[in-house]
Amino acid sequence: SSTVLNQVARDTYDYDKFPIVTGIMWEALETQRPSAWRVVFKGLTLLEHLIKNGSERCVDDARNHSHTLRALHRFNYYEGTIDRGVGVREKSKQLVEILGDDERIREE
Image (cartoon, rainbow, N blue to C red):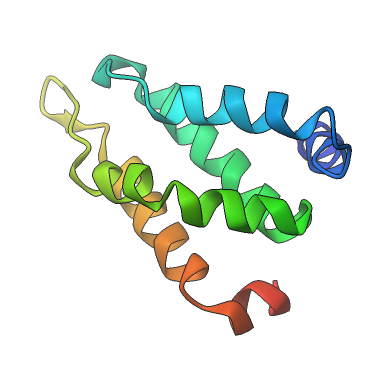
């Protein structure tokens, strides 16, 4: 929920909580199990919220992990004929675009 996302974003301003929040988030994004696509998608949703609403360190941290985001451009998982990876691929591309545009980050 947005309340939880906002609380997590506030926690990124806390020196001690920042590495805990980002560590758990990157762990979710780096999962090697494609069947955990929901976890990866939720991690990307959290990252997007932190880029827009968290501390400036979130942007720097995301840029330092851009290799992880770019690797998700190739994320693939199907349940039968349903492509469950498309949301992960699209959101990771959006985030790389946002991170490359300082003006857009300030606007959002």
